[in-house]
Amino acid sequence: MARLELKSVSKAFGAASCAKGVSLAVEPGEIVAVFGPSGSGKTVLLRMIAGMFEPDGGDILVGGRSIVDAPPERRGIGMAFQNFALFPHMSARDNIASGLRATGAGDIAAKVAAMSRLLKIEHVLGHRPRELSNGQKQRTALARALIGNPEVLLLDDPLRNVDAKLRYEMRLELPSLLRRNAAAVLYVTQDYREAMAIADRIAVLINGRLVQVARPEEIYARPASVAVARLFGDPSINLSEVMPVAEQGRMTAAIAGTQIRLDADELPSNTRCWLGVRPDDVMVTRQGGDGAIPARTVAVTPIHERAVVLLRFADGSEWLAALAPEALEAGPDEDVFVRFAPNAALLFDHATGDRIGLPARRQAA
Image (cartoon, rainbow, N blue to C red; front, side, top):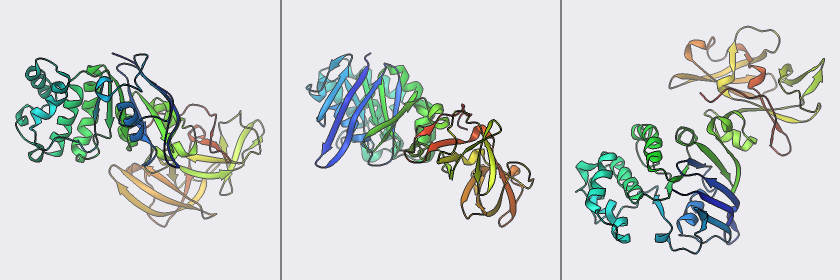
């Protein structure tokens, strides 16, 4: 198998720039999720690799060989689309076999049978797309992408159009299935949970630029910027403007008039920052004391196994806390105190939004 490498790849359509000097390498057998908001350039990036679009600048290499001038069928790339893109007049069997027939491969029937067993769709091989469920369509499209043993596999949000139950199941199944193929996998998604569950590394793309590439737990614990921090976590990260100061050998900052200790010895004093705390790290209690911020509960919303609490501080600013129901000591419209561990806080430069170095935090729950 071969390594996929992007070197300063750029693409624009008129005044709209979709890729701005993107550089990224994916090793054989590695799954890299390209994650970002809608319109950030994720699909355009995949289509340049596949040969549907030609980059304006930079290079794309597979196994150390440039493929920019190679036709799509000669790139050694498999691709599964968000909308499945199955041929409506063909059976599932013929859809899966279509790529093999185009390249003149042999023993097509045996290969289709083996791949369909692997993906558990052998019982619907004779059905046309209109007779398949979305889950069966998704597996058929994946089988078509995998069957030629491509060196590089591109998956464009393949689980977006399937139901929640199947999406959860495929998040568990896909990593082992993809690693069995040993291709370099680039997996586009707009779902941060999916990216964290499936990928070995996540490449965060915002406005056509890669802003952070790291392992999922690293991106959650140490996001490179406020923009990245906001993309990971539900509810989103709490942010407050602070001016940390050094006092008696320790760093503190005031939130709604309450001084909070921070684990940030390297931070220059009197620097305007954004302080971020994830709702999972916020504790709501009736006990006051040092570092306890007075607040009032505005609303309590049960979400799955957690209760999300909207809190309002004395200065009018609001935070969210995500708690296990048994840990919630108050209902709506009650006076409480908010706490968080010093190492749960993230600090970001107020002007640039870039993260300021902090001790490692816990991994995502």
